[in-house]
Amino acid sequence: MIERYTLPEMGELWTDEYKFKTWLQVEIAVCEAQAELGRIPQAAVDEIKAKANFDVARILEIEAEVRHDVIAFLTNVNEYVGDAGRYIHLGMTSSDVLDTALSLQIVASHQVILSHVEQLIQAIRNKAQEHRNTVMIGRSHGIHAEPMTFGFKLAGWLAEVLRHRERLCRIQDEIAVGQISGAVGTYANIDPEIEALTCQKLGLKPDTASTQVISRDVHAEFMTTLAGLAASIERFAVEIRNLQRTDVLEVEEFFAKGQKGSSAMPHKRNPIKSERLAGLARIIRTNALAALENVALWHERDISHSSVERVIFPDSCILIHFMLVETTKLVQNLLVYPENMKRNMNMYGGVVFSQRVLLSLVEKGIAREDAYRIVQKCAHAAWNVEGGDFHTLISQDPQVKEKLSPEEIKEAFNPDYQLRNLDKVYQRLGI
Image 1 (cartoon, rainbow, N blue to C red):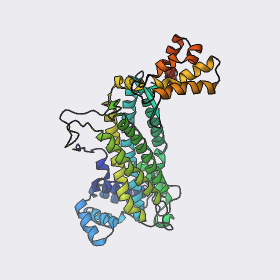
Image 2 (image 1 turned 180 degrees about the vertical axis):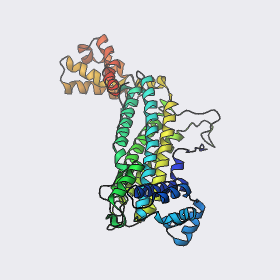
Image 3 (image 1 turned 60 degrees about the horizontal axis):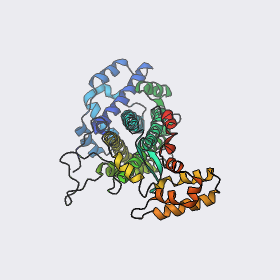
Image 4 (image 1 turned 90 degrees about the vertical axis):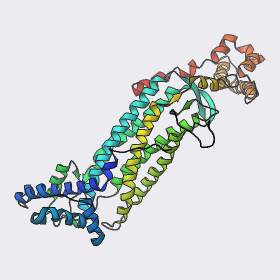
């Protein structure tokens, strides 16, 4: 059963209530700017601020008739404000409200996302430190390669999430952009000073050169940044799923008391959180593609982007928030099985130490191609053979015995050699 999950932080940012709240915030900020420049009476602004309100149900009722969301909103606000409402929306076009308010929603969502990225960073950092010396086998192509540590694997995850944090910080200023420039963005009926003052009040900066909308490359950058973060979360989830396979079982998602994995098979303990995360990442990536498709609008504007954004922004922001929370809990509660890691690494008599034996023979004067042939023969004889023992075969090989002492062979099977430089990576990450 999928556990219930509420989104008090992110979810409310994408409700109709919050959306109209940001619309009203923009309209009032414009009125304040107009009054500061002497364009409308300050008394009217005071009255607007005192009376302005809205009712979501009433807006939707009006919209059903007029088929225009901003007009429906303004009509409802004026029902509260009265005569002073004639100063609201002066010289503005709908996109001035919609795009500037959307930026406020995106900025607020960005702050929530960034705070949860910090929590994920700390969770991975702690787990990486905990398993700094937990030896396991590294894999390439899904096949055993050479020894590493589980902490080192997590260090790679940490570095990746730190890069995503940098990307999120880098786009912080780019997404905090507003426009109050009127029809087709020419400021014909509203002064650029109004835009500058309004954006300052809202914590935004004016768009450099808006048309009648803020160019959608800004929004696409935000969405592709979320998609990159989701892709990394999926990478971590896929790794956990692979390591939880029955024939591997080196790590496992926490399995709560009373939890059940299958309606038919009582023994099942499935990686459902990781599978869920992998699936949700696909939605966020797809939404990023839709955001890129939104960049190409007709002339100075059309509204083909609008219907898309009503879906992709709430969905992606809420989903990435959910994924960050879930991934943080997944890492914090991850079950790690060092004994299984040790068992898997030493399958077939430590065949994964073949390169170390190869290099030891080369150091003793054997040509690399000849050394490779000797070691590969023993490795393949042990590989996937019941009771196959690479260490024994190497120790008994006449050409190896001629060059390497038993102590030197034993040292070639010591995983510490492969791990000797990992502290440098930890130093780079400050752990």
